[in-house]
Image (cartoon, rainbow over all chains, first blue to last red; front, side, top):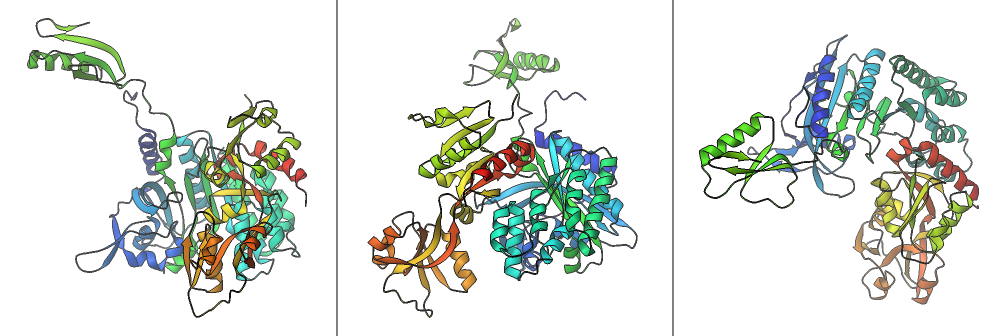
Amino acid sequence: MEAKYPLKPEERVLYALRGLYRQYGYSPFKMGKFEEYDLYVRNKDFLVSDGIITFTDTDGRLMALKPDVTLSIIKNARVTAGCVQKLYYNENVYRVSGSTRCFKEIMQTGLECIGDVGLYNLCEVISLAARSLELIDENYVLDISHMGVVSALVDALGLDADARQGVLSCIAEKNADGVRKLCPDGDIDGILALIASHGPAAQVIPALMPYCDSGAAKAALDELQRVTDALAAEGLDKISLDFSIVNDMNYYNGIVFMGYIDGIPASVLSGGQYDKLMQRMGKSARAVGFAIYMDLLERLGDGERPYDVDTLLLYDDGADVAALARAVRQLTAQGKRVTAQKAVPEKLRYREIVRFDSRQGVLN
Amino acid sequence: MKTMVNVALPKGRLGEKVYGMFAAAGYECPSILEPNRKLIFENEAAGVRYFWVKPSDVAIYVERGAADIGVAGKDILLEYAPEVYELLDLNVGRCRMAVAAKKDFRDNPERTLRVATKFARIARTYYAGLGRDIDIIHLNGSIEIAPILGLSDVIVDIVETGKTLLENDLEPYETIVPISARLIANKASFKFKSAEIEAIQRGLAKEVSL
């Protein structure tokens, strides 16, 4: 159907995403607004921000307005051998926003694939992430990183916990000078290559091969190669590798990714494999998923209309109400947006102005 | 149409020095040095648009995408922890973040240390690393006066030459971290203008004197 009244960008995207996820067998997951606070305390570091809005329920339990959806989904996941459970959601979450340090309600859409996750599922989720971005705007980039590659190269430096964290932060900031200062004597060529290389897999993977020729690093790079090959075979060409995505290693492992849209200054999509979080929550299964921050899509300009109404219908105090209502109905039946007013409202943008006369009906 | 890269430069001496590095790297914009009150300057041929902003605001412009890249001091990056890439240490505007106190100051570990500073986050992180309990007093300027009037035990502030401290009978006590100006980039802009931004980064890297 040709949209006569265009949807707002986030509405249009949400509608399209729902269709996409259903096509791939994902079923909707609806959750309550509250969860027990305990769930978040146990996995505090997994949360993007540390502020949580809490309150006491009528029975004295401490509850929280949910700052995250993934933890609730995992809690409710049922794992069957050989199968995966596929869920998508569209929920509001409540977190402290980075720049304002205040609580914000953020609408988040995403999907999770939990269970016996294999290479196929991994590729499917990443491909759905890319296609979700494409539905938002064709001018997108999906950056992929592999925590296995990053952690193997950092482990090889043999640093203590503090310095290790420092090097990881530098990788996230693409801060090569910082790594040089932290490890003045270390063999950091591999880390510098990791920071310097980003772009298509066909360029980046060969550049990293000399530093990932054995053990965990090689296995991780090989997996990355298989995944990017599969995505390239699907014709998804706006995927690039970038190792500055460094999520918390206590929760994430394997592939992690982030999506950007031209014109929106922050990442709109974020996801990855979180097998370690599953283990921590006592589930013997693997999992991968992503979330899209729908509130950022307000920045996209479309949906803006040149006129507030098509017809401004002006009537006098003495106008016959029934006749006026009939005139309005006639105009709306022609598919016009109408507002009946006694005077021209300030700043109203209208396509045409029409006078109403009780005896003669609509006059132009 | 040529892709334009928006560059936020810090107003003041440091900004002028940094502009010199951009110009030497082939991104000049002669109108910028004319004495007037304009804030935005553009060189379409070189693909750059400069604007002057308050030094402490550069990171905000870049984080929110109003500027694609910018130049900000490491002090600002540590304090506000903006979500940006830190691409290059420009090695100009060098100074250090330090703890300073009155010359006769004796630290008493039994008491909560009162710390006056503009840089609350840096101070908090530093003392948390030492396991020290502190009371932060957030000030916006003239920090040096706080220990003199007994408002605080120590201050955490930027020390360049140490002259202001000396004149107020204070001395630097410990260095927290060395500071210099950094080239930063908006994370999304880096994805869509990576060739242009990296060309600037390479050009500037050649101008960095160690």
